[in-house]
Length: 166
Image 1 (cartoon, rainbow, N blue to C red):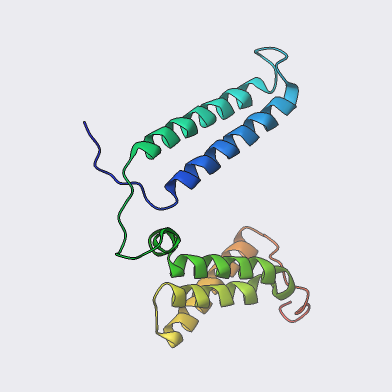
Image 2: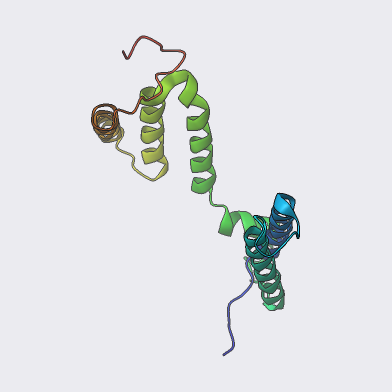
């Protein structure tokens, strides 16, 4: 059966990245114990990395045979890639996650999580600010109660606001 799927912009690069990653994992698995014996500690990771590498090579061969997808007239390949595979909301959400990770230590769990929830709701399309603020506060209060009291997990209090939320 013939597949009519077309190759997406950046798909070949992704397959090449998988091959490089497979080679890296194979090298890392070899470093565990080398080719000492079939029952050595590194033999299973080497087999798994080899399967990953062979699969990536097969995926590259299959992808290379596919016809390229046609974009908008006059649209360059990088622009097609950006439009189809890296939408703005994905980039914005990734930046929000990175900001959350950076702010978790100085602001603590409560403030940084609250800001992250509010920003996330806005990025995902909710334009009702009051509802976003209330839903984020209620969700965070539930999470805080469950983790702090039921599971006795110590949540980070933050270095900038130490003593405020104790």
